[in-house]
Length: 162
Image: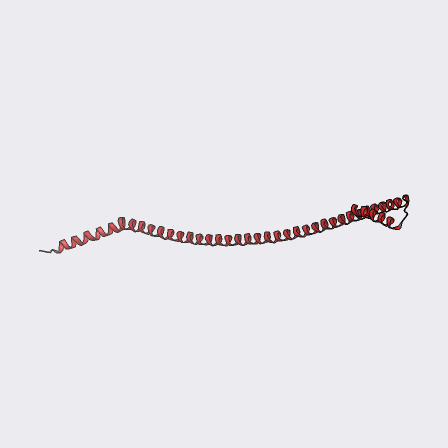
């Protein structure tokens, strides 16, 4: 193999011209496209990171809102229980008062009926006593034992009525 300086110089000049042309027309736009692509990828990574941070913050907000809602629900339930308990106590108290009033009325009614019955009984006893006395006066009694028998008979009649 034979090397000649001329071919070496010509190859070197051709290489330099090719390198210059590639750098000016091919490598510049290629590196520019690659740089734009790198910047786009970096921008997308940054946006994804920001979106992820926003999503994490949103999830955190939702957790807080959920905890607040649960707390409020528990407070509402507790208030409902207390209100229910108070209403129950009030209803029980009203029922006791009403039962006491009804009982008092019943006791008064019973006492009134008892008094009426006693008055009727007294009236009947008075009437029976008057009947006995009038029958005793109408009959002429000749002996004491007959008179006692008559009184006993009328007392039995009066006793049978009451």
